[in-house]
Amino acid sequence: MTTGGIVLCGGRSSRMGRAKAWLPFGDELLLPRVVRVLCTVVHPVVVVAAPDQEVPELPAGIEVVRDAAVGHGPLRGLAAGLDALAGKVDAAYLSACDAPFLRAAFVKRVVDALDEPTPESDRRWVAAVPRIDGFFHPLAAAFRLPVRADVAALLDAGERRMSALFGVVPTRHLGPADFAAVDPSLQSLRNLNAPAEYEAALRELG
Image: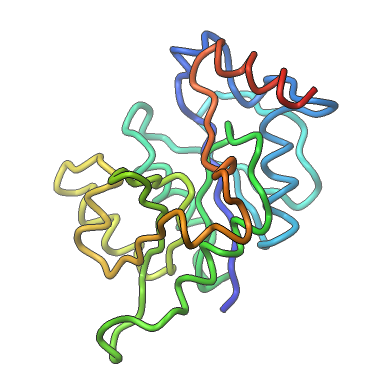
């Protein structure tokens, strides 16, 4: 199974007050940092941005695609990323751009879950997503490319919630035990939504 990556960075960042993609983190910016980590596990990686959004300089070979439907949420961004990867890979890992502690081993664990046996031997997992304390983390999930049709159907029906997708396709739910060997504290799931969270992450980075 060949796997690509999709990084969403077109959100409004209203709580943060400035574009998350450009936040300094160590000796790099946040978006390039996430892209760098993903590139060690999956290829190719595409970045989904808003139509007129400026993005930091990215490594050669990273495609930036534009999501024309501004404000329609990550489900629409996922559709744009899947369209860009169609015909190139079998599956894709989806990430937000504000995951500073993302680990390559975490990404691989989520992707590998797509190939795990299902309760019904004639089916395959179409999606794999962390579900911690009853909550999905859809911006740390993996999808087989045929999910494009299901995403399109949901969008046509006016649906914007990523969680709706997990109700219509065979989905492997991953709990804390699934990450015990690769990211026991689940740092890969940390997002930076507000200045206080960003400042705390910088302190932890040292």
